[in-house]
Length: 259
Image 1 (spheres, rainbow, N blue to C red):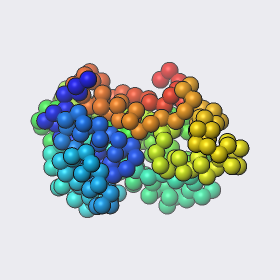
Image 2: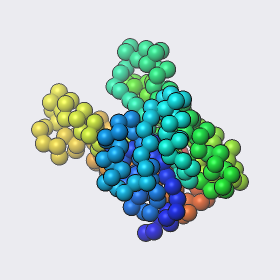
Image 3: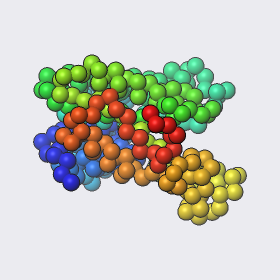
Image 4: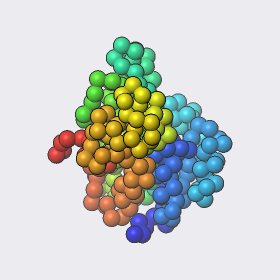
């Protein structure tokens, strides 16, 4: 399916690995001119070279100076995918107010910085797509990672607010909400905790048991980065011109809700 992205320029934040890399790879394959973003020049350049990207933008989005550097390197973009962020596995006792503040800065204010720098141009040109990568924990939080799940909720909320602000402009704002996705850090985490849970030793056993006990879903496995990228591809295409302020869940049925 041709997503009609030829001639469109896209910035995917946090695209030097993981979900962001998969999204950048799909958009480039569909003909978009993709700018790869990261904080490490060698990693971002490696991805950019492998997908034939239009450029590389290096900067820490949790700072104004880093956001300015990224905006300068990226130029005008038609598609903004706010994927960059951070998370840990701290609970309430360990997540101090300082940790809450730094996590909010990295996961929410960083996205706002990108919106402020790129959306005015989209509004002027009369076309644009803004995607936040959120998560099911935004609406179904657990005891662990309270600071992280709160930032996911904020990302979902700001996307809908932005959609209302962009009414009638030709620019849409949506959320892609992944479930547990098999990226390197998740594989490493599950492998490390498998012995204490008795999940076996092979990856096939570990993934199956984790999808039953830790992140239960209807499909019985973890998602793949390419499946998240596919949802982003749909939302940034002309086929989704009538979709704005929406959350597309790609979680195998992890979230037990009709909303």
